[in-house]
Image (cartoon, rainbow, N blue to C red):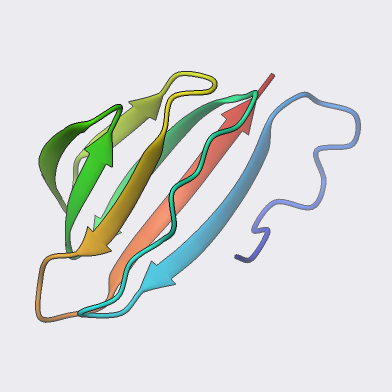
Length: 87
């Protein structure tokens, strides 16, 4: 992950961007913060709280705190995601 905004100071909002290559995915994640993913490029299959969703470039996802989620790249190109989270 790469932080793309370093000037937030003490603001409760944090952000990053990450890439998932074709055929790859993430491990299951659970955390104490709210999180939004903006899919900038590619196509993802996302499992959120036991349900699967297909998400494509131009769409966004919202994750509640402590809900399990993971994803895999469902396409032929790299998927690029921008993430924003807060407590």
